[in-house]
Image 1 (tube, one colour):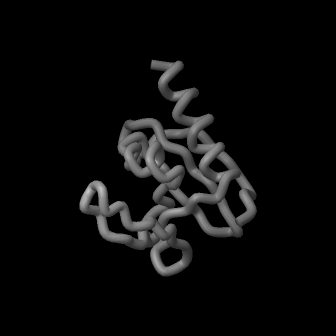
Image 2 (cartoon, helix red, strand yellow; image 1 turned 90 degrees about the vertical axis):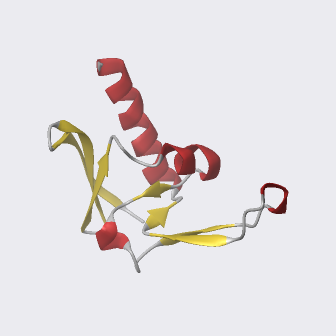
Length: 94
């Protein structure tokens, strides 16, 4: 995946990150699923990415968790790094 553009802005009055990836927009908002980001190093790119990209999560029998696929998510290191950088910026600006 290639990041074409990175913009910090707002969506509905809240901080947002707008990425253009391979010519397609991804809007990351402050209410992103941080548990997925922290546990699986993956981020949701938005509904327009469903069917385009997905992350496979392995089963974790110790926690009664079945294997699953998170549609519309990516674990691309460059994208995850941009999201983490944006979150650090947002948290520092507050």
